[in-house]
Length: 389
Image (cartoon, rainbow, N blue to C red; front, side, top):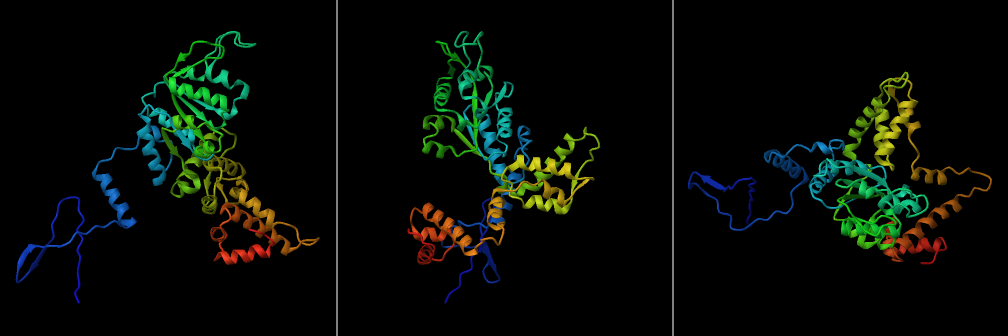
C-alpha cells in the first residue's frame, strides 16, 4: 500500500517545489504527473480577487455612476458593463422591475458617454396618448392636420446630438414601432405631413419592466425592432436580490428624506430605531427602491420625535400581494357555514391545477412543483380532490 502526498503551490510568479534531507541534501522535487484543479472555494476566490484588483491598481469608480448606491457584486457588475457600453455609440436596452432605477442608470450612461454635452430627454412611452404618438415623436409640418399652424420638431429632432431615453418601450403601438425602427436603421425621421426626411444623430436608450424576448414571442413587440434595440442589454436586479445593498440604501434614502424635509415647519431630523431597521430589512419590497423611499417618507411623517420606531414603519408599510392573498385565505370569518374541509379542498385544487398546467401534464414534474414525494402521491391527491389529469 502506498500513500501519495500532494503539495500545491499557488503564486502569481513561476515557482518550483524542492525537497531536502540529511542524506540527499536539497534538490528539485519531481512530480511525475499534472494536476488540474477546477474548484476553488468561494472564500479563497473572493480573497484572491481582492488582491488581484489591488495589485492591478484598478481605477476608482466613475463619478457619473456615483448616484447608484450599492455594495453588492451584482450591481457592481452592472455598473462595470454600463461603463463599457457608455462610450460606445450603440442602442441600449435596460430591463428591470418598476422602481429599480432604470432612468437613473440611463442618465449615468449618458453622462459617461461622448454625448455628455448633448441633451438628454426622458420619454414615458406609456403616457403619450395614442393619437399623438406620431406627432410627438417625429414632429409635423404646417397644415398636416387641423390645428397644425406651425412646423413642430418631434422628440428625436429636439434631442439631436444627445440621448433619448424611451421608458416603457413595450407600450408603443405597432405602427409607432415601425417608424422607430426606421429611425434606428436610417438615422432620419419623417415628420407628419412631410415628404422629405430629416437626418438626426440620436442615441436611443430604451427601458421596460417587461421581459422583451417574451413580448416578441407573444407577438406584442416587433422582433426586428427588438434586435435593433438590444445591442447592449442591461438587467437591473430587483431590490429583493440586492441584500448587501439594502441597509446602505435605507441610510442613503433616509438622509434624502431628511434633506427634503428641512424646510417643512417643525420637522425634526429622523433616525431609525434598531427594531424599525430590522423590519425594513425583512420586507420583500415588491415596489423596489421607489417603494422603499416612499415608505421612509411615510414613516417620517408618522413619527412624533426624532426616532422612527417599529410601529411607525409598520404603519408606513403597504401590504404585499402575498400578504393580501394570505388574508383572503386565513382571514375568513368562522361559523355561519364556514367549512374547513371545503377551504382545504379549494386551496389544494388551486395548486394542483397550477402544477399540472405548468408541468404540461407531466405528473413527476408537477409533484416536484408542489413538494410531493412522487407522481403516485400526486395521483392520489388528484383523485382525492376529484381531478382528472
